[in-house]
Image 1 (cartoon, rainbow, N blue to C red):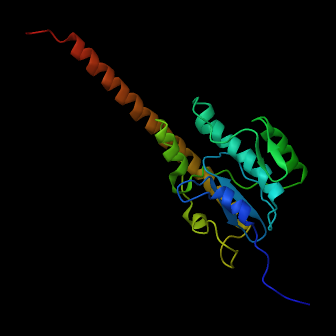
Image 2: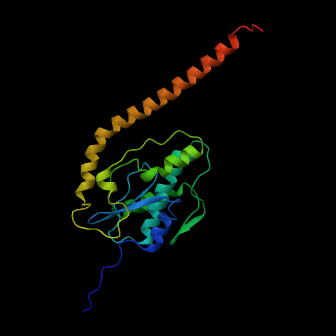
Image 3: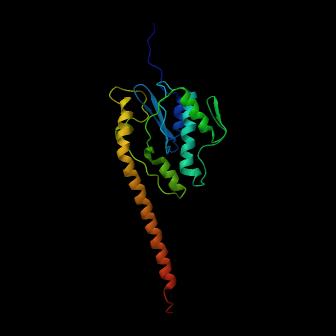
Length: 212
């Protein structure tokens, strides 16, 4: 029996889709001990725990599901240009409409895949920067350094990410969520106050008597 090095957990084609270049990335992957997770920047859905060795067919379903959600959260609702091209093809699947996310989710559910935790993920602020280029408010997200330090590893190593880490983060999120809501409320309050100040300043200027 010939014993060689184990096959890669994700293929080069998947890596290229997630990392087109350093300036044009759409997401990352995380190797857990017994499963793989992909996270698209700005997606607010809980990702599925995909197989340890990830085939393109399952990646494509999860990619479309998360990318459509990210587009809707950040660009479609704000009537901005979407980032995902409809009638796009990955592996054996063609995405013909944004409603495809429902069918993709059903397929993944039928495979009895479990879901991980919801994380407002935006590693290196890619979604936040895209929003600001479109003259939108910055994206309020949060960091989880103990997980992010293992982003895009070439292979899983002992004492890195284990399956139990996902459960621990769910508990953390129950504490973080109120803080995020406070951050968003504070941002909107500051934005509202600045608009009120600008409005009152304009009103004062218009009411000032002309002494010339």
